[in-house]
Image (tube, rainbow, N blue to C red; front, side, top):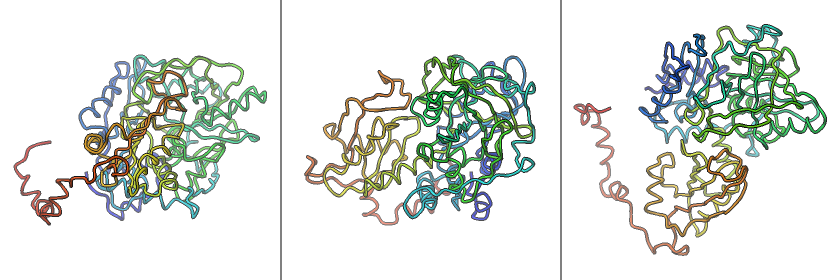
Length: 501
């Protein structure tokens, strides 16, 4: 892999489509192209597992499959997966001038880049979208309505043998009501037929609240549109909690872009969707008739339950680009959502409550675990910081607080803190509180116990030792100035005969 030059980065500061972003990934050597895979034999799913087995979650490339076998027939894609979420890729996405493979440096650079998207009050900047005409909208290159609508003809995947069926699982679901308001959220959608699919907003999520409010008002249907493969910033706003209830996610997408998002009116309703999307699936969600949805392999990597009485969408139109791209999440496995805005949102929020906060990270593959780094000065600061974050009802079953000298992107350093700096007495168990994530260990929906682990160096006032022994590495830095620099300067020479991976 290589670093992108400043001039290259400037040309890719804003990606108007997912295609632009994937092209930039490919220039960095971050995209694997595959001619065909038999998904009746689950080869695409197996490839996703193997890439992560062989390269690790932080280094496995995005991949593109030109065509897939589904239901005994070969269907043209391409199908793309594993697109988002690694810090060098996030740096590319958010216009960091010099992108490298140094994860810690890219983490800091992305947080700094996103800080520039805040207003003077510390809130995300918002820029309203701008409507464009139909000829200016790539998502309108092909328009299917009436009997021409056939959702099943596209390369949506059934990820796992135990899943209930094929899924549209990387769409931005637009729900809008003139009186109540609107929401854009990423909810999985089970393909139920050529003109029907189920939609799964979890109870309490913003889309669910709007649909239930419309149902309680007596409405029979809700107009809904699903944009698949929108521009990356729209997908950021859709798949994270940047916006509060009834705030306009497309304004947040514009703020992330630094300019208005082009949108276009749907064919069969008044909803405006991102003009650069790969697909737009339009229809009506029944508020009187419901169907079972699932089971489905969930984000924790376990099979989720069948959902009785879920929402069903009757499709009235499908518009798309010529040769549209299908984006697929191998949920619980691949990296499918830009995580920097959510991470930055949490960091900027909690920094107001925790002045000494220096970093925040949710380790990959450890849903419900969050690690904070703080510049600790006084007794009790670690536990106080952890309690603020544990109060988040949506996430954070286990909150680990460490000192600022540790790299919170490195799991071995977190384990070091637990092994060498933490006493189990420096922890707080919360027996029961809100937890909205689909954690398979929960005995009751919506409830979980939580734990705060203060793995900072305990001060004498907290029962810690009178003094802490110095780190061996720091003793080397202090006692042998220049040792690292001399080895770095001879790196190529020292490794010239090394044949390792």
